[in-house]
Image (cartoon, rainbow, N blue to C red):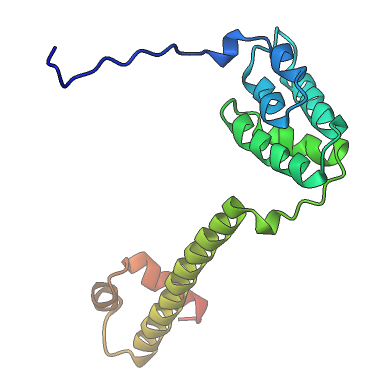
Length: 168
């Protein structure tokens, strides 16, 4: 080992080896939510999630801090595929005013959904235009259906199906 290299030592902590009760007894919301990563001691995940939310709810802290803890719990619960359970339990246990529309992930999902919707709309618009061109070519009768299919880069069956829709 050279003089410039250093050894770094650290201990790895396996949260799943720690009983959830160790975290659940905390009065600090930051510690309490870690119970979702602990060992459930063969108890159902729904039961543990309910206990965590009840514990957060019973803390004598401002609602803003409770809301922050619930958001953090929701993220951590995703690490154990328990996010759906948490999301379903929140309104049953807590009366928090949580506007999902202000959530960053919601906004990102909405933005991505809008982009996908725009692309789908563009494709649909192009398809409608293409169908109009094909129908016009069929009505004109100057090209065979095979030629129309080749020119518009669709199958002959597609051209024939469009022809049927207009009664030809």
